[in-house]
Amino acid sequence: MAKLNFGGMMETVVTRREFPLAKARKALKNETVAVLGYGVQGPAQALNM
Image (tube, rainbow, N blue to C red; front, side, top):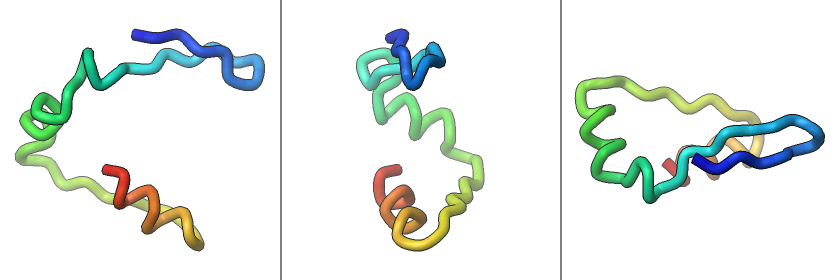
């Protein structure tokens, strides 16, 4: 995992190498996922999933 300083806060980021798309699909196979967003951000964020 990568550690990033974002605006004075340390964030832990899981990379695609550590959690590839196939693993994410397997983990979410039987789950319902909702994306909430306002304005132009909501559709853009949903497309990034």
